[in-house]
Length: 393
Image 1 (cartoon, rainbow, N blue to C red):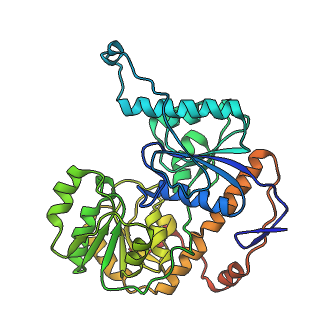
Image 2 (image 1 turned 60 degrees about the horizontal axis):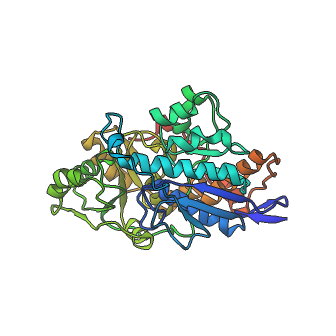
Image 3 (image 1 turned 30 degrees about the vertical axis):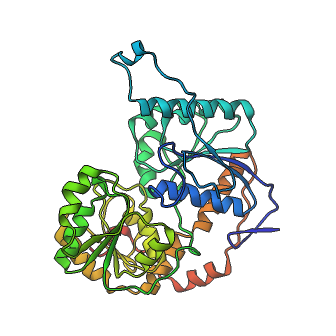
C-alpha cells in the first residue's frame, strides 16, 4: 500500500501527466495570480508523490519544477498584406494561438502521456481536445467566457471540473452538473502567524480586484492597511491606488512566498474586495491558512470558503459595511480560522481528488480512501457547517 496525503491507497502506477498552463505569465514566484500559484503547487505535489509531470508554460517558469517545456509559437509572421487586412487580430493573440496549436498537435501525435490537464483559459486546447487519445481534464478557473464556452459547445470529449461550487453553478447552463475540486493551499508552507494590528490586502492591483475599496474601508475602520501585489494596470494604480497611499495605507510591491506568508500572518485581518465574481479566491484560503480572519465582499465563490468562525461578509461594493466587517472579523479566534483552512482548503485533498480523476479518465476505479487520523479528530471537534446565506455580515 502507498500513502498519499496521509490516506491509505491501493497500489497505483506512476502517472505521466501533461499539465498545460497559460502562455502569458510564468509559473514562478512571485506568482502573477491564483491560477499560476495553483499550477505550481499541483505540479510540485504530484511530482513529490512520484508522478512524472511535464508543465507546458510561458517563458520564465520555475526551472525547479520537475520538467518544464516553454510554450512557444511556430515563428509564423503574417505578410504585410495579411497585416493590413481588417481581420488581423492582435499579435499576442496569434502567438498564443500558434503556441497552443503546436502543442496540441504534438500531444496528439506523440501520445506519450497518461493524462493531459488543461490548466489554462485558452479556447484552442479545448477545441482540439478530440485529437487526444483520452479526454483531457479541464480545470475551470473562470466563469463562462464566449471563447471557452463556444469551444465546449457540441459535447467534446473532455472532463471539466470546477474550482468551487459557485463556478460549477455558473457553468451549469452550458455543461450541466460538473464535479468540483476546490483549490487548496499547502498548509506546510502557509503556517500560522502571530497576528498583529494592521489589515492586509494581497493580489493583482487591477480594477476587478477592488484594492481602492479596501483602502477606503480600512480608513473608515481606523485600521492601517498594507497592500502587496503586482501593479498590473498602471492606469488604475496611478489614478486609484497611488493617490490613496500615505494616509494609513502602504504598498510593499510584489512579494515572494516567504515574505507574503510573514506579512499576512502578522496581520489582524485580510481584506478581499472583488468587483467581479471570483471563481475561487485563493487569497481567502491563504489568509485562513495563516490564521488571519477575512473581511470580504460576498461575491462569487468567496462565501463558499468562509464561515462565521473565519470571516465576515459585506454587501458587494458597500465600503461602510466592509468597515464594520473589518472590526468584527478582527475579534475572531485565529485558531478556529486556521481550523477552517485545514477543514476545507488542504491542498493534499485537492491533489487526491485530481489523481482519482486522472485514474477515472484512464479507466481505473478510484481507490477507497480512509480518513487520516487528523481528519477524524477534526470532524469530532468541528461544529456542523452553517448555511452560507446565514453568515454574519
